[in-house]
Image (cartoon, rainbow, N blue to C red; front, top):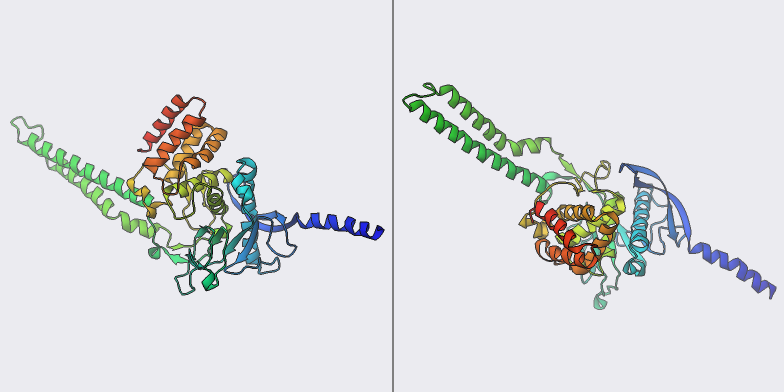
Length: 404
């Protein structure tokens, strides 16, 4: 009897310890001033003493089902530790701060780094012959698998692609900021040419009047034409100058950029209403907002030169609504992120945060900015704002300033 009691006494602490293992690793984090630094962090909730597997996350490489070992390559374990650390932080935010029952109930997730396969709704992983993926991250919905082909069911996963150096000319991206600048340049150029023409005609007419103010308009005409020539040269040289001074190469290691990790987990936490089917401005903008909340910054994925040349997103960048933002190709612009961030500042930090979390209930992945998002914002305010009439007027004013 005494022997049995002794075994139980020894066993209980061991089991308790196994359920709450902690281990220190180097990882990339942000300082209070949003600077990236590599420092030692504590990984919590580990259930393995030798691999990156915990109660909520298992970090694997590529298509493997085995967790990455602590003794693996240092560069690999650094990325695994960084990913695990920030995923834990994101989960704690939604579970403890936002009181998300959905996030709390999510079973252990498999997180894949260095994973280049495309996603297949039926087969989980697309065939290796399909074009490999680099420099991005993807949250994939759970699947039933395909028993006839030996494909087992899988849960919701996050895939972090490996970094690859690519020349910017080979990128298929929509540079919204550059396009907006081109539009402004064109408007300024056309306006300047019209003003120059008006001055030219006025000078000519005055020179021909009986009491002509200027009998010799040559000097004025030269100045007018010269101004137009300078503007035209600047307009025509805009693209070549931009290409000459912009960055030539692009790469992005998504597994070590904190805000990208938060963004991907936000997709998971919001998926009780924003289903993970495809990318839209709404689903990306909502994930951006909560990534900014977790990071405590309006800037996402900026200033990590060693691992990231992506220009990132900025909620404080001023931009007006364009119909293109509704299109899938423009889903990752930061317009919705900025719009939601500005509304939070109107409502106040705590109220705005809860407001956006309630807003997800009024939206679907297919919602549009000018349709269901605006309607959802006003409905949420009607239900939760302290002074709905006044607050809705303030919200509408802010939206109007953004061209909506």
